[in-house]
Length: 293
Image 1 (cartoon, rainbow, N blue to C red):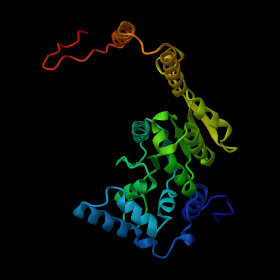
Image 2 (cartoon, rainbow, N blue to C red):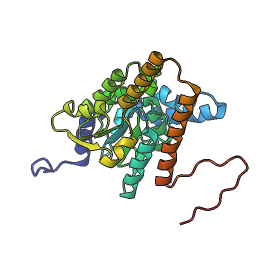
Image 3 (tube, rainbow, N blue to C red):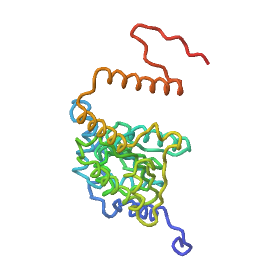
Image 4 (cartoon, rainbow, N blue to C red):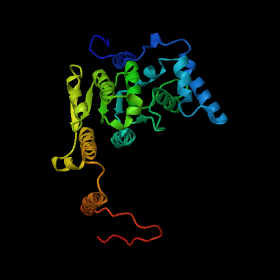
C-alpha cells in the first residue's frame, strides 16, 4: 500500500538517505558491524586508562576494522551533514552554527574535541552512539581540516558546506595557496544541498562555478564600509612584497624613518581603538578604572 499511494516506510526512507549521502546500505554492512561501537568504546576506555593514543586513537582503530562506520552512521541523520572548512576560523564557526541550530530545537552532533581529521569525527561519534550504532541527532556540524575534508567527502557527501577562506599561514602543510583552494573546491563539488562561500575571498567565491547542478550557492561577506579594515590574503601579500622591494631598492630605512612609520601606525591603531571603544594594554601592576557609559 505504501508504494501505491506514494508514501514509503521508514526503513526505505533511511536507505534512500544513505544512498544520497554516500553511505552503506544495511545489506552492505559487514557482519562484524554490530560490534564496532563496542570495540571503539573499549579502545577509548583503554586509551584513557593507559593515557596512550590521544583523543583520535579510537577513531583510527575503528577506521581500520570497519571503514564504513563513519558513512553508515551519519547517513541516518534527517538533515544530513554541515561541513565547515577553511584555513582560519573553523572551530569558532562550527560552534556558532551548532549553537544556532540547537536554538532552533535540533539535536546537533559535532566534533567538539578539536580533532578535525576523519578519525577525530569517528572518535567523537563513539562517544555519542549507543551499542546499536544509531546516532540520536538531527544534523551533524563538522569542522574538518582542508585535506581531510576531501577524504571525508569521498565517504560522506555533505548536504551543506561552509567554506571560509584560503590563507598563506598554512603553506607548511599544503604547499602553494592554490593547491589548498583546489582541496576546498572538491568539497564544493561533492555537496548536494547548498554551498556557502566567502564573498571576500576570490579563491573561495569562484567555487560557485564548480558546484553540481541542483546544488544551491549562498554567500557571506562584509558590509562595504568595513572591507578596508579586513584586507584579503592577496592584499597583504602585495603590501609585504612592495615593502620588501622598497627596502631592497633604498637600503634599510633610517632610524628616523622607522620612528615616523611607527608613530603613524600608532596613530591609526589609536584612532580605531577609540572608534570601537577599545583600550590599550595597561602597564603591569596598574589598575584600570571602569569605562564610563
